[in-house]
Length: 353
Image 1 (cartoon, rainbow, N blue to C red):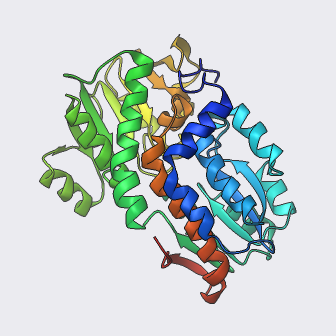
Image 2: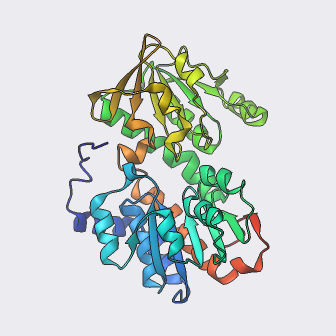
């Protein structure tokens, strides 16, 4: 999926890099705190945009050998890939990352850890996972080393997930479609912190918002926040946005019941939250919007079902993501120093935040 560049992406890379460094001061400070990482072979899965490049640079500056698997081709910026490669960072697939024999992992989505488990690779000492999608995948593995949940850290979960993703997602949707949310019926699927942020931001932008949530506790929270909690049907929604971290959340059955002209948006890490096979081939209406015929109805798909704010936009703002990137840098330092002190399995992240 090739989309026209945004205004930000059209700026010269060196100018963007200088501007990003100006505003991502916490990340720079965290980089200064990193211990010596010269004995570390760090395998990273990340959406390869300019903000991620800054924490990758921090690892390299501390002496670590770094290899990167792009989390999604649709969110990979070619100029950023070329930049990190000039820093001596190889950009490749999960199999090659495992062949490279990493000692530690920092991931968005768990691809390298899943590949390592499938291959029986035993050289990983400890890892970090920062997405709900990745945590769900890693939880199914018989781990032989500790993996720490960075998504549950309040700075990530309560700030980044709750506030920044919703804002950047709706900014991207409105910029690409030239539609405001005023008066539109929006169904938010999942009321974790990302879903809550999507719902609150949409309401603030004038949408009529409903929430579909299978967890009774989260559903109750959504109702206390003033949202109508409904079954996952979508037959009244102009826009359905998903943020669950679960495969197949918007199933073929759900898609078949969507309102004619409904726009499907994915704000989660992976496009497999939507059953894209059920949509079949589509016809481009706008860059980033395709039309699909399902049971005589037209269903619109945004950004090919990939994570909307990065696949079709510029992701989270620099100053907001600065908090998250600083955590990603600090946590890697803690992981190398203390990760091996924990037993195998999933753990809440107990380090500095």
